[in-house]
Length: 69
Image 1 (spheres, rainbow, N blue to C red):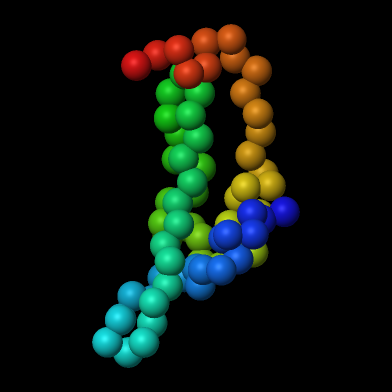
Image 2 (spheres, helix red, strand yellow):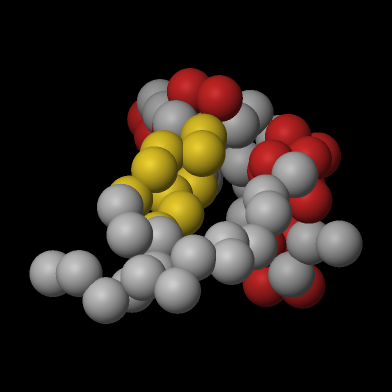
């Protein structure tokens, strides 16, 4: 399920503002005891791509999560 606010954005890679293309580029980074790029900007081209990435994330069970600088 995609958060309601994300459905308000047109997600994509087209960036020619002079032609009226105003897409939002999205990446997903997870944080545990280290940061991991779950999806790069070029991996997500639609709201369904984003939803698939978010639904595929798993919760960490590490006791050291978020304790490192």
